[in-house]
Amino acid sequence: VVVVMAQRAGPSTGLPTYTAQGDLHFVLHAGQGEFPRLIVAPGDAIEAYIWAGRALNLAWKYQIPSIIMSDKTLSESLYSFDGYVDEEAKEEPLMLWSGNERYKRYLQTDSGISPLAFPPQKGQAIKTDSYMHDQQGITSEDPGVTREMSEKRQKKGQSLAREIEEYETVKVYGQASSNRALLFWGSNKGVCLEAAERLGLRAVQVLVLSPFPKRRLIEALQGVERLLAVECNAAGQLADLAACYGIKVDDRILKYDGRPFSLEDLLKSLGGAGI
Image (cartoon, rainbow, N blue to C red; front, side, top):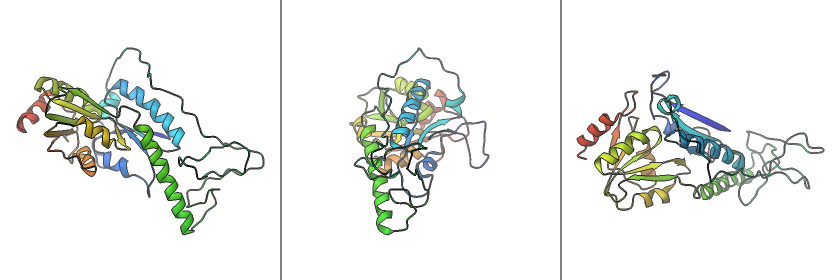
């Protein structure tokens, strides 16, 4: 399944017609238990176009939820761009049941991905179960089966993380040699790029938030002595996430009044931080 999360200011009804980036913590942890998910955060129309296709492909291939993080600003603004072809786009082959053996919906494999079969299949039961289950989909509370299925989901997550390494999950803009950098995600892309150009800063965009691209982000931040996260929320949720992977953000430039950053807003805030 592919879910588009178009954020607005909350909680509850909040400001349904204004923008925010306050749902990252929620999306990272929504659901019971531990299971892999893909979370992407495009920053403009081209990236939304590209990553929507990739998210759909990977959701089918890995049989996981793919979540596209958007917000009021990105989802309702008007954009134009020249016709674009994603050179890296590919139709992911599905792992389908061969038909040569008894069908097991949750078959253990090296990748953690089980073969798919679609009913009707003569002589075969295709069973899915939200309760803990064995490889055939039969309900089980056995501790060994519970451990086996948990490890299977972990393997699937590891396979997804390896494939995500093939994509450009972190982008660097602005003055690449600067030792001061803006860290951002989603629709703050345009204003961060313009501020970085004016002030001679490096601008680092995180496009994929789960699996988190730790290695690529560390590489993008080589030589940075002061890192400022720019976000439209009150906590600095990307900064929190980066900290979980040992990446320290020095300053959090935050806006949480339901309006996106204007260039003037951001330059003023950066000035207040001594940039």
